[in-house]
Picture 1 (cartoon, one colour):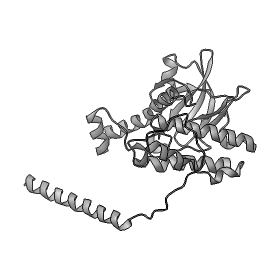
Picture 2 (tube, one colour):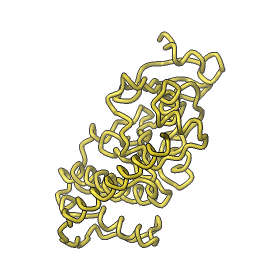
Picture 3 (tube, one colour):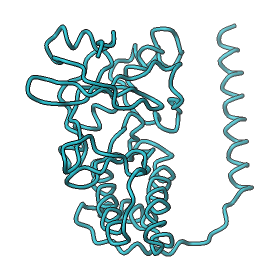
Picture 4 (cartoon, one colour):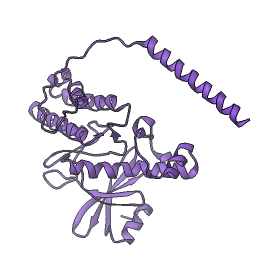
Length: 283
């Protein structure tokens, strides 16, 4: 097929020899099957921010560190340069996460290169060597559903031990390769220690898995791996070898809504006082 303009630099650099076909087009990227020498790989071409349906929500980017103070200021102001830096950081987040997770023993595609917003990586294949299907396209027996679910729960644990939460994990972000499930799509990966939404995002990831696999293995619908995993994580005792039961007793403690509102009002008053003081100095 004709080489897409965004892939042309990789062809010129000798990283890609031939573009075979488009594999899929999702909410954040278009993926092509490419030939690199004797290897068949895939090239993930990120869409421009205004073409994506998946937005860079604060709930995902909170806690991500930016080394350059100039870049951080520009990103905060939302200038043209800042928006470009945010886009670059969004793309690099997946590359960084893939390297970290691979080192932690999580089954993710192998990264080969990243250039001009294009991620060159392993093409995950099924037992016959064809491009692996996504989990949502696969019918499962109860036994296979329980096995895949158990495997993915332990992958989630390994990710958390590496300080990462997927943040958008579902049957659409898991490929069923010849050797089992492979986790994909990580630009929204969350820093577990630095993001206030980490627990909620972990719980949503795990709930998505329970709901999907629960249609084949109904017993999973009453499990609570999220609560169990997070409670162990908070104690600092979570390891990839942890034995999980899927059972967790939650404390039905009512939220102190009035107390929260009172704290918010106090913060607002402090900020108003700080602004008045700043204005008096400026005069």
